[in-house]
Length: 475
Ligand SMILES: Cc1ncc(COP(=O)(O)O)c(C=O)c1O
Image: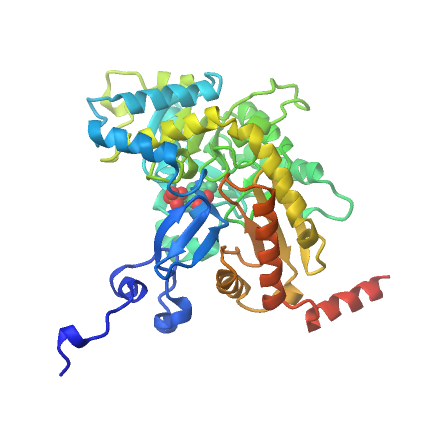
């Protein structure tokens, strides 16, 4: 029998497979195979992640959309070091502290005071739970306890706790738990890819709004809130839609007395070109003021710069006003132990400092253009369709004829070989990089993706020949 000391040392990835239950990862019998072992990361620096063998990877999706200013960011590191010396944590029930107060004040100021009363939690799904519960409880407090239902968009994603999953229209995550969930009303998504012949993105949005209105006409007495991901349904495969949908949904929610919850967990913090995606609501066609905010706005992911779990729900002043009462039953008795953690709030304050001091929103306009320019050759590739970009999210769908089976996994592993960490959603290739790349960096990324595509779906496949012949037939 071999003694412990002569056993070969297990790699970090092997130990991880034994000790850690990895999220969103099927436990296939074959998962012990090297191909599916997790990538063991030793450190990060700027947009780069370095594995335990010293190989570097460009973090093309900002580590699940959380990282804004690169890894090991000096400003955030310094702020956290200082905070560690002062106060690491205290409960927010009955106590308060400067980072939570300052953060709540600054976030409210960013909405021009339209939203406020920050309710903190840790993850995105918790923020969604809070917004849903607050909405229901508000209606109960104003004498409408029958508003117990929610509406969400087709293919929308809002997290995987039981409440959030109920407003998530993704069978892959939802179906196994269906018996536990109170199903929401699912309405047509304004996803511009659904355009019929000669239909514009605005017309798709109008069609989706018409469907929303018919639901409201029938059931608004029972519906507490509509929840949407403004502008981009990220988990749906970066489904982008026209901002007119936001104005239209706001107007319908007002007309039918339904709350509007903007889930900006993925699209907030500058991702779509403005700090809040909602700032791009036009409010023009409907005769509304330009900045007509939702009733609730959920933020998470990027708000702490990608450093610590933090989420926050901002709401309109009228919401909190209706929870003011001596009767405990009217109070929002919701909490998480780490609510408003000072370290997480300090990281968020440092993140807002970087936005201000480095004029990030302005500079990102250049990055948007660099990304668009660099991706242009890929964008005109005949293997891809629905090429789209909103702010610093670029996406394209690989035609099913050329994608073959298991496209996302094959693209992921091949891109890793080319020094890029990327996880397509189905046949959708997308990048959502940290805001720290220049024109050269964008070109480098695009060329690596082109090389990857060439291997995963070579340009002269049978599939492409099929596209050619279909086009010939159509002509
Ligand atoms: C729009 C949206 N809402 C909610 C969530 C859930 O956030 P978390 O994973 O932090 O629970 C996500 C996560 O991807 C998301 O994209």
